[in-house]
Length: 159
Image (cartoon, rainbow, N blue to C red; front, top):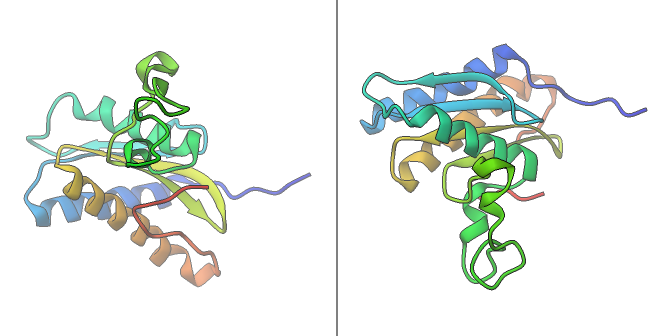
């Protein structure tokens, strides 16, 4: 039997708060979704003025990152992005009834080498969504450091 780490509400709230604080500093109305390892939302918040489509898009990005264990933009990063035309996963974005997101803004949450969830952002450009996602991961690292747990804090994540 394997023991597993489990992302809980206080950690998810801290991550969402950090992402939204970064969005505020950037002046961009974002939506953030933090999911568990199965891609189901723990926290979903939309800033005032953010697009009404943001919650679904942020959830899709977090779902994809958690479930497929990689940052969503890596699916389309040349030259070997697997979802690019002619590559092995071309068309994967139509999986899961269109819920599979293959563009920037989704990041797996990796603690001690295990994917424990996903974070998805919607509302900014790719650079802004990435900055907010990395801020969320950094917040989790700061929170868990005292427990001796290591969170991968970078944009390009793939397990």
